[in-house]
Length: 105
Image 1 (cartoon, rainbow, N blue to C red):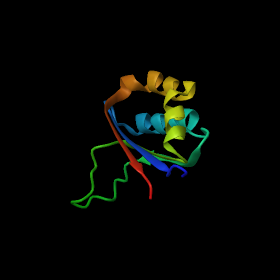
Image 2: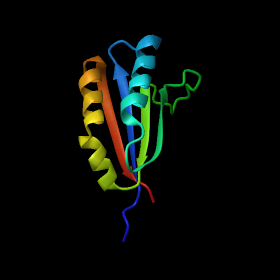
Image 3: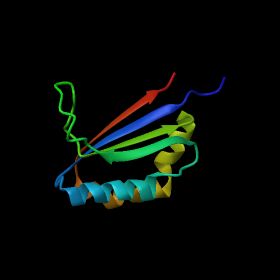
Image 4: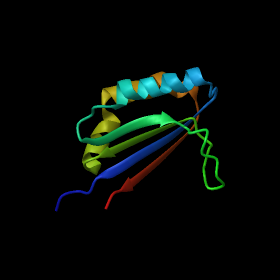
């Protein structure tokens, strides 16, 4: 039986959430995290300032959305040198990182 797709969603809160720093993180996500084997969907962007309803969680600066074809593809991505370089180069700028991984039915 084939594995179900896996959604990997990451919310980054920066120490300095200036427009410049948010744009740099988005650029680095595109550079290091896109185009990996097994990626079905990739997107990254900043928190939408116009959506401020009581249900909106606005405690992040940048959101990364990656859907992998399987958990195996996700696991391979986690160890990929490009992913590890992304972490090494960007981690000092992160105040908080929240990761939500879910199977997709």
